[in-house]
Image (cartoon, rainbow, N blue to C red; front, side, top):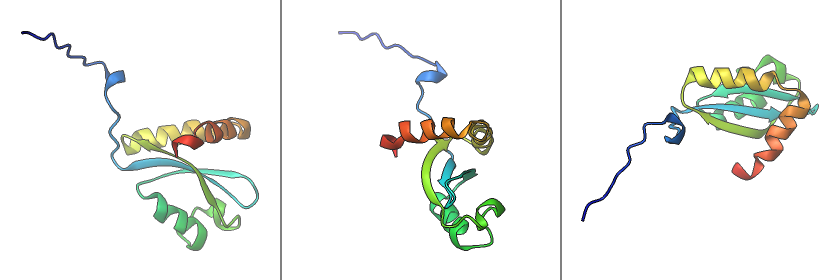
Amino acid sequence: MSYNVRMDNDKKTKPQVTSGWYVYIVLCRDNSYYTGITTDIKRRITEHNSSKKGAKYTRNKRPVKLVYQEPAPSRSSAAKREYEIKSLTARGKNHLIFTNQSDQ
C-alpha cells in the first residue's frame, strides 16, 4: 500500500507561531481606546492602571480594561499591526473588538 503525501510550503497554511509579542487594545475610563504592544499583557495592564510605566495617555484615564488582544509572530509585525489598528476609526476598532470577542 502506498500513500500520496502532499507537501505544501504555502505560508498561508502554516500555523502562526507567536514569539511572545501581542497587540492589545484597552478601553479607558473616558470610553476612548488605547492600542499598544507588549510581551506580557497582564503586566502591561497593571502598569497602565497603577504605575508610572503605563502610557502617558492612559494615566489620567484610569482604570483601563483590556478589550482586545492578538498574538504577533515578531516585535516588528506587532508594531505594524499596532499602526494599522491605530489608523482605524473608533467605529473600525469597535468592529474589530466586537467581532473577535468570542476568540478571547
